[in-house]
Amino acid sequence: MRAFPLSMAILVASFLPTLAQDRPKPPARDAASSAFGATCNSGFMRQEGACVEIRLPENAYLSDARSGRGWECRRGYREKSGTCEKINVPENAFLTGYGGGTGWSCNRGFHARDGACFAISVPAFGYLSETSIRGWDCERGYRPVGDECVAVVPPGNAYLNGSTFGNGWSCLRGFVEQGDKCVRIVLPAHAFLTGTGQSWKCERGFARVSDACEAIVLPRNAHLDGSGNGWECEKPYRKTPQGECQPGR
Image 1: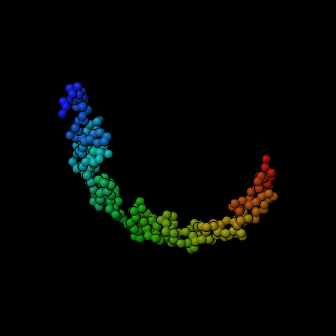
Image 2: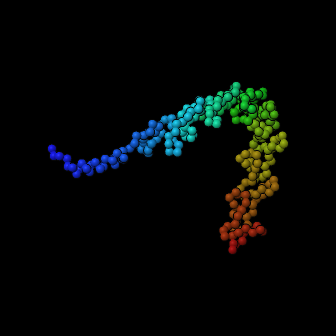
Image 3: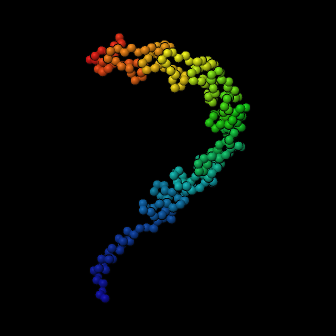
């Protein structure tokens, strides 16, 4: 075996300090290596380029640090001034909130007032309702008046509409509400009831004039419009104040 050349040994020796300097240092006790550099170990969070230990208050647990604290309060507690304060749940209530539970709500049949849950007083012919600000609604055939459910008595030619607003009834088709009654709609000649049945309009080719339908007389160079209850000029004619169609300019 040939002796290792002296010149090669000198060259290798000159590079040894550089190689020693380029060798990566082991990660600190509170950090771990990653493709993006050092990341903090569990129980530590990055602050100003360093990994700082997370100090947990009582009744807290380590989180993913999205909150900026690195911890969250346990269920039944909420964060207040860097601590975890116990949520005081009143009688007839239960803890609410996604995840850790950040508040409380009253049980069904109760409503919140002044930090407590009070029973909802449902009147006769009423029932509990989560969509009503009162906490209750009236059964069909009744409507709320103050704290009671009052029977709805429809007049002749009317029916119960089930609404808790207004008088609780609507007129039958062909009748219109006037005060507390339903009055029959009188159709003039060449008229028909509209879709709601509470009003009328004239047939095509007729125009409403007061309470009657009068035939539309078309001037020269005109035709019925899209509604059928009026007219417009043929192009390039234009309507004049006198009700004629004159050539346009």
